[in-house]
Amino acid sequence: MKTVLDLIENLGQETEHGITEHDRRGKPVVTRTYAEVVERARAIGAAFLEAGVEPGTPVFLQLPNGLQLVESFLGGVLAGALPCCLAPPRALGGIESFQARIAGLFSAFPAARLVADEDTGERCGQPYMLPPEPAPGASCPPREADPEDVAFLQLTSGTTQAPRGVQISHRALLGNLDGICHGGRQGPTDAYVSWLPLYHDMGLVGLLFCALYTRSPLKLFRPETFVARPLTWLKAISDFKGRRVISTAPNFAYQHCVNALPPKKLEGQGLDLSNWRLAGCGAERVRPETLEAFNASFRPHGFPSNAFLPCYGMAEATLAVTFTLLDGEPRVVDGHVSCGWPVRNTEVVIRDVEGNPQPDGVDGEITVRGPGLCSGYTGDANVPQPVRDGWLHTGDRGHLRDGELFVTGRYKDLIIVEGHNVDPDEIEFHGDQVVQLPGCRSGAFSVEVDGRERAVLVVETSGKEPAEQLPAWADEIGSRVANSLGFKLYDLCFLRRGGLPTTSSGKVQRSKLRERYLADELTFLWQQRAGNETA
Amino acid sequence: MTPAEEKALEILSTVCNVPREKLVPEARLIQDLDIDSVVTLDLLMELEETLGIDIPEVKAAEMQTVGDVLAYVKEHA
Image (cartoon, rainbow over the protein chains, first blue to last red):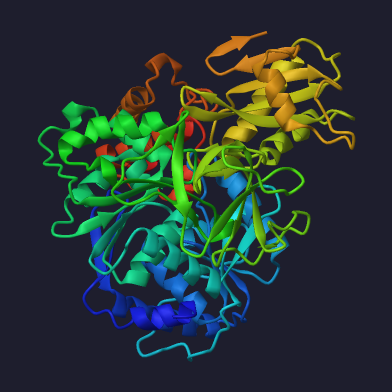
């Protein structure tokens, strides 16, 4: 198998296993074998061509987790377009930021197509097409692809800021799938359960494509079903009788199960998790206390603690960089969970700021080389390319011990809320937009509160505003952040102009700002911390 | 107030853990009541299941305040 086209061809032979789609309430609605999925994907590919979708055109898919999305994605690849899954508008106030996000996509990719259902399409403010219905007998003509050709895009940023598409080649996807499935000894006797959104690398590559690659059955759920009813996830795994299940999620999901499912809610559910063979955990920092708490809650229900597989990866590496060993307990050293060893054919080198490799045990930037590396960013010309001289510069901090990776922090200014990456720009933008005073800037960073990452925004003002101005601005900024990003700021502080630490070139130094904030070295004019309003 | 709206208020109060008197129509769910994404989705699912209604993604994205939720419930339940 050299290309995704080969993968789809192979998948089309599978007449036994397939995908079961579940509705929002977690009820199974339809099952199709992979042979049927591929047949429909071929017809959808033909419909894309008929609709004039040119090769290399980004096709943004705004559809819920389900068969239609999977088939449209594969159909897009078959037609030579660049499919890319999009996040839906966020519930409770997300409509405007959704429209801004879609507008941003079209300004970065003017030739792009947007596929959405009618409800959503009518509200996105841009031209859209309905998901093509597969016509009986229609089939996309076979085509050749070079392994280095880009097969699809994964978006890494996406609010009002310029969107950034990570280009994944056929070579990268297949190279990374090989690494993942070798590391996890994944094969046709496995089964997959996924509620992870397909616009997330872990959902798309780590679960969907692994299932397609190994032709294993997949139960596909919607993310909102898991979040609102976490027991649905565990029941789905438990109910997969006779097969050993692979199901992966970010750290927050395991913690959510612990918090939302106390022992008495599990009574009488008949939960038996002994067939869960691989519980991958990644996409955000893996916390030892979460693994421990999950074990304590679910070991009585058969969860094998050696099923936990902490891992490290990112969309720029297609997905996986390192994997822990199968059948071992997670290892914790100095409070850091081991993320394991590089997947097959992949290397990790820790470097200092000058790029020199660092010895064992010394922290530096994690850099990666291997077949899964992306072909670069597209869509935002202002962002530096992540792969330089053949190495992916992750912006994450960590060290190696005998080849084993420990991720300890971040150099890049990134805020991760519930497994989703938020660029500090996306928060600062609202501070700047609301205050709009010459020379005043904003700085955002994250702090850890009760084991969760939360965002803090510091905004400069002239210091001469009337008393009622600052709370009014705070309210407006808070409301814009809540509407566009879906969370409340942990702390919103105003500082006199010039109070933000900057580099010699005048850029806000977020890491230094964070240090000073945590050390209580900043004097604020006004501050509004969640749950505790002070003047 | 219709019985469905009454029921919706009860769900809002329980799921969001907010006393009834704070559930004024203009209260914004995320900003004022400080509900996070987990509570948001739990709330929507409870409303759908208890009231037997369907809240499409886009409609849910248009709601911001307690009043928006009640108006939708009044129209659809």
